[in-house]
Length: 88
Image (cartoon, rainbow, N blue to C red):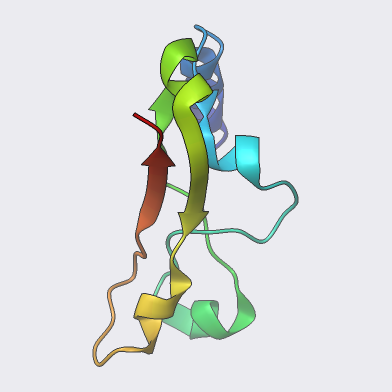
């Protein structure tokens, strides 16, 4: 995981904005939870779904969130959607 985080940081440092982090700060915000050992119930996940925005797109961003409500359905995925709203 540290190598993945380092590679991701290098990409972001090319001038991209990571949309979710531009809107929401703090820990505990994830888009994936392993089915093993009750990870969902403990909120022991990782955030592996991202929107990387160019500066002009970042200026158009209205919101970006993680939709955890979909986990309430029957046989939910181990991922939840991350969505973004842009002004046109």
